[in-house]
Figure 1 (cartoon, rainbow, N blue to C red):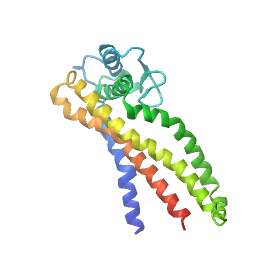
Figure 2 (cartoon, rainbow, N blue to C red):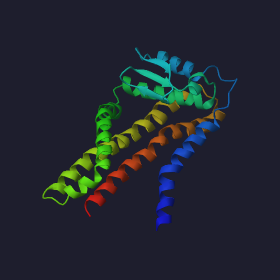
Figure 3 (cartoon, rainbow, N blue to C red):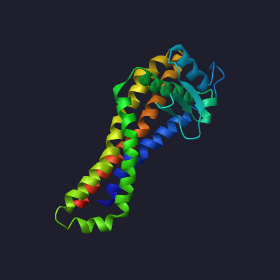
Figure 4 (cartoon, rainbow, N blue to C red):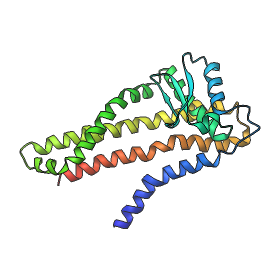
Length: 224
């Protein structure tokens, strides 16, 4: 039974991220036939689409789009890189800028929930450190309900953010970035581009499942 649980955990949490990293690394080879870097493509797309006020920056904290500053941030390899991964990741992050510009509801909802989720995660850390005290509290009248409510608020909010993130990421990849890439990437590179776009979205799958399982695990433990 334990072995099966370990295998399941590996399949759910390790393999999605490992596959995503492998795909992204596989297509990092420099391409002299590409007209520009990831940053140049992102800047070009933002200007072409008329997304005013948006900018492109290099970052050391992972590729992402920041709705507050309206900034597409790319890691050094993707900012300066002239590879399939670089231009595809750049298009994916521009996809988020398009979502923001068009008022895409799931992105706006995620942006509002992120701040709440950060506070909820801190509450979850406190909850785990205070576990012995909480188990004693559950023996008191009404104590179990209080602890379960804290667990649901903490881990449930984090799970909700991750679940909302999934459609946002897949929409940015396949409804926004993919049609744009077809105009800039050679047809023989499009299968690889689709794999990279899937990897961009898939990095959140394991996190989503982990959040849901954390919530379920705590509810099972507290009901004992």
